[in-house]
Image (cartoon, rainbow, N blue to C red):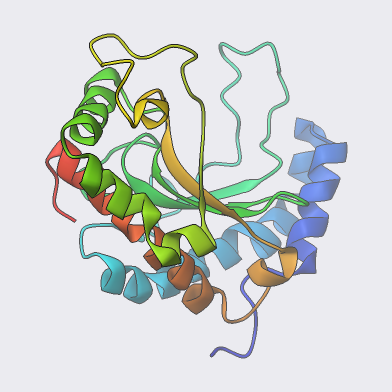
Length: 229
């Protein structure tokens, strides 16, 4: 186990300060803090996590590139939003499938935010074709779905989350025994994390354990959309 943590109290202090001063002038004056306490630790963590991820599946990527890699940009896209705050007040890291190009692809995720850290995995806001493929596999192979999300390790570690339809999706039997799962718009599992979990030097090993518990869900989604796990 490494002697020093990746993320520290200073990481969370910066994010709290950014939430209180979410403006370009403040960020430019404190950009060095962002680099030291958020971006550089994230790059180091992503690099070190690659070997742990490889043991879960060889088809997901821990990409330490500062642009276009596993670390999401701190800058918000405000073009179509009424909320014009320029910066995200959290740090997001996603380990995407090798065939995925965006945040909606199957993957594993780490969210770092004061009072709101969590690990996630699965497919968030999948496109229409992906969404239908996942629903069809659930409908046609209910036992495979139950096995993916009903194992002891999964249930002890994670919970299914995300948005759902209020009515059954078109083309699916409202009487299907898994209709509540077929209504899902997101196929993700999450686990809340304490700040002490994120600031532990043992973060890569501990996070890999959480991801392994959710690997059956990700494998189910990969099978549904025709990519290897």
